[in-house]
Amino acid sequence: MNKFTTLATGIALAVASIGAFAQGGMATPRVDQREANQQARIDAGVASGQLTRREARGLERELAQIRAAGRHARSDGVVTPRERRQLERLQDRASANIRAALHDDEVAHRH
Image (tube, rainbow, N blue to C red):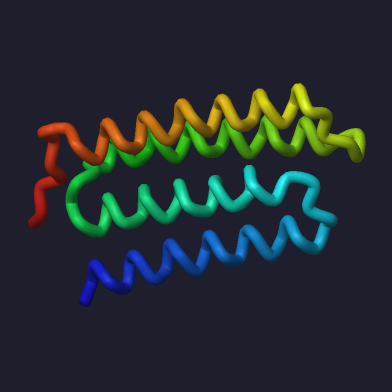
């Protein structure tokens, strides 16, 4: 039950963040959806014990940096194709890091 609650909370937060972007006129819907998916993958990894707290913190920090880059790209009201590609490259790297952390041999210890 606890794993389900954590996963459900993570998904709810991801959906809420998409809604927040929609209100401001989403300039990057694909980037925003990938961000939500990546957050859900991290949350699911924490819930299943596949991610340690340290791994999750690092991945969360990486997603925060991508969100900051997205805010910067949107700050002038226009996301250029170059800025979009940069955000997508950052997300590609984050996705690979999430995949690696989920499939390594580290396991969160349960008490």
